Length: 190
Image (cartoon, rainbow, N blue to C red):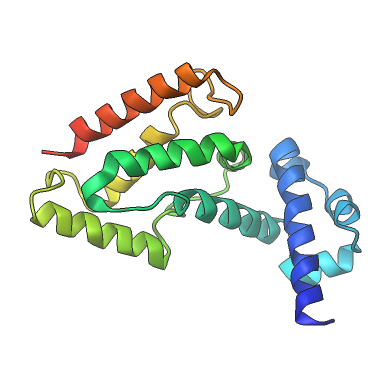
């Protein structure tokens, strides 16, 4: 199989698995259903991903990385990063469903936003901003980033507040975005 064809097959499997995992969870997802939706046989799915849990991990990674890296990050504009994450979560609700299913089913997604080269760079930037007095130094960089991501997801379908949907009234998004920016600023900017 050519590399381009293999990439296309892998992409179809990830897309089909995203839909199935988001709708049914990890336990409820079916390899038969995923492979049929992707137009491949189960043997190909197993050849690419090994098992269902590894497939979920790949799906989760694609979406988590896309959301966490969707917004430009600079440690001197944490409110701007939080707003970018809010917008990315509104536009990609499947990530929130995947996180929710993983937590309900006891599958660890810990440190997904920081255990990458991009995550390490964010932590270094926060540490430098703390040394420069731009970010409150009383909170460890990894906790600043974790809290920032959690704050941005406050109105997700996994939160206790009303879920923000892409088709919500613009005034509702504007109110939430303003509250988020102010809260992040007050929490982390000295």
